[in-house]
Image (cartoon, rainbow, N blue to C red):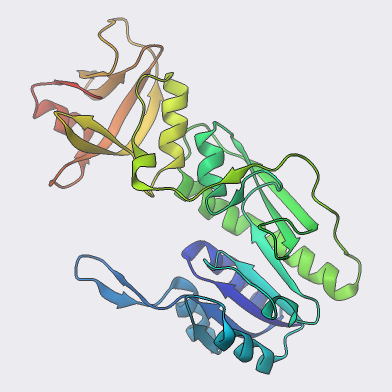
Length: 305
């Protein structure tokens, strides 16, 4: 099948590779323009652009799917468009250009968590069963007919980056099944059922942990914002990034809630109903370090807000 692929970040790459390995003819790839990365802000091609170049796939770099992208795709005459985390909307007339339309691999069990950050918001809400849905793209946000689904269970505290990487790999099965089903005519899709929920884009302030909440909710919040936009707490009115966090057994000694102290050589953050270990942190203006090393540098104890 002649396929045009639209995607940008690392977790779109497994889908592109799966289509190629399955023998589909990927006639073009659309990805966002090179972006400045790192301290030196070096212009860097997207992960999808890198893989497309390696595979010799013609590539269009565009930050929006406007007239240029529409004309480019029209010349390719694809049977199907596949989009995985491109970072922009597909509108008419581009939406209707491929013979079989467009399908989207979305990282939630639709209609739950439509929008930009489905895995992150699901984890924040304490969900541990995370899914993928392949659906027909329509003008409304993530609202098209469902073609295939899959889901996996994740341990509490699994960070969003790790969960997304796993779903990006496992979701290729659902994507290939949908593409093959459309090609053979065996799949037409079924309407989404249930009440939609929305996964709005995360902002920096979403990363601030609320230590008045139960420990399980704090861990879930941390998981949803790690690695982006990044979890943090306040110590002496300065942000402390929390890079690695895990639940531990409650200690015998009860201190004031939101107090971090050394216990058994580890940095333990004690909350009202449970304890969490600050495994790795990054103080403002400093390099990342073990939580225990940071705490020892403060005399072994700190009030965290």
